[in-house]
Amino acid sequence: MSTLGSLLAVEPELELTFAWPRNAVPHNNAKIAGLAVISSTELLEDGHTRTLPAGSLVLVIGEIPFRVRGRIAAALEALLQQMALDECVGLVVSTAPGQPGHQPFPQSIRDLSDDLSIPLLMTTARSDLWAQVDARIQHARLIVAEHRAGQLDALVQQLPSQLADPKAMQRIADWLAQALSVQVLVSETERVLAASPQTAAEHLAHAIIRQSVDSSIPDTGPHTQLITLAPATGTQTVLAVARRSPFDDSELRLLQHAAKLLGLVEQACREYRAVATASHATRLAAVELLLDGEVSKARRIMQNLQPGLLDADMARVFVVETSATRRDTTLRRCETVAAGRALVVADPQRRDRVLIIHPVWLDEAPDSVVGELTRLVCALRSRCLSESGGCVSAGQV
Image 1 (cartoon, helix red, strand yellow):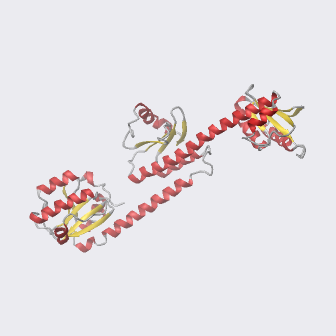
Image 2 (cartoon, helix red, strand yellow):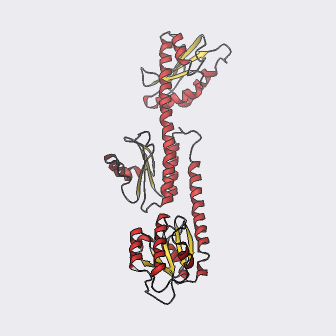
Image 3 (tube, helix red, strand yellow):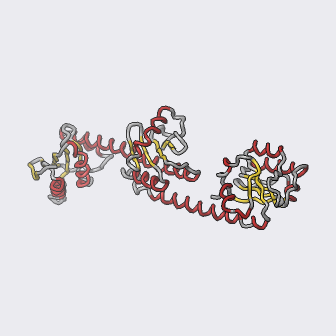
């Protein structure tokens, strides 16, 4: 997007210079959304009643007298007041060429410029040279808008088909790191959820610690941003990003959008874990009841979770022995093989075993589950798969 500084640099034919303040550097980065042209005649007729587009650079055409005073001075003061209300970025007046160092603005207007933080500029270029400036500004804005739209579209594409996908948060962090050339860290109070690159955790740890000490700190430096993913729920999950160069407004908005998506993923994962924990507790209770011979009670507590699963009159009990470190992996693989046709739980008594209760139906193929479990155990090189009747496979996980 065009700024006051870039307009001076890339449009030399406009012969544009700052008249006030003397130190114009703070205004160089002011973004220009468009050009509003007012003739000196309109200025005197309309006063400050017209509404100006936000972010516009206001150009008064028609040569301003060597000394601004009287009605035109009052009109310019009224215009500045209106520009402040409409959030305009600067006032440009046309002056006669060949007067280097000429200061057309009286002290009262310069004081008002300081109060309103609206810079005053002069141009000695002809009006026709300004005719295409607004079109060029709008074209530059269009390019920026298309780039932003492309970034947002690419960000949305990072969302997985299932929000609880455990790898979704890392994919979003990786994309954000590449799109904005930043280090990214998503973390809770006691653990890192995603980091890109992997060294980001080390570099951003200090920023997270500072925020935990004083939550009123919005960021820890000009090039570091900390955004809470779910402020409404009170969770402590934070998106932290950092880089060497400052962030512009569009990048900050992109970070806010990324934080919202990460918040959705984090919330979905948390809810999925809660549901999975409740489901596991229900399954475990049902297995214990079955092993104690309380079939009716087991059927009742499983009715909402998997209606009809325990309606069969007979069942097989399988025990898969594995190592304690690989039990969770083995459990998930067994659940996949069972595909809802059996109860699969981690043995509460031993950390190296998985229990499977398989209802036996008369119309089921004799080896449908047994065969698939046997093949799984062989693939995992499991130490032992025991059925309530014998050991049918041996190996080592």
